[in-house]
Length: 240
Ligand code: SF4
Image (tube, rainbow, N blue to C red; front, side):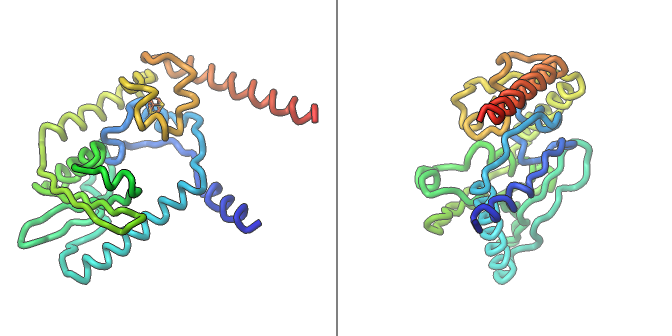
């Protein structure tokens, strides 16, 4: 009874709205999935359990911010990147340690992934590169928290302008695909890539080719599928 009410609370908070700008967290992510977000394509809702995990992660962040303030090394926290045309984002913190500035990115992850980590995850590395680029800071720290055991691992990242340029160029490529209604290719190792396993667009992605396709035609196909599915559900309910 209470469980259902809490689950419903989490589910009701999810709003399907089309994305209008790139976010730094899109860096290194599947171009097709980003395209679908901009087009507000039908997506699977996240389970309440996953949303509670996100909530919990935010609590961890707040605890760390608190400690940074008390240590007097947190220059500023939750700071938006300077306004420009292509991308939005908010860094967790900018720190000053021994007279050197660092961008801090905090990630809470599960124990099994944490234990095997010898370096930052690729997508986290890309994200912090863009923070370094927009804040014009040379070094960053990615701080991983094992959310089950409360252990930390940290990785220092140096600014790499070539990688940032590549990431920004890729956003421009996706922007062109969005404007020309061209659904991008799937990931090269689709469907084995980890992103496909967690992708909210997996169902519709499976409905079409691996190659680029025209979004308007594909959208018609999706709408027909959704209509047919709804008719089947109605028929099944009537048959009961
Ligand atoms: S299923 Fe994989 S390839 Fe398709 S949109 Fe999602 S992440 Fe990209």
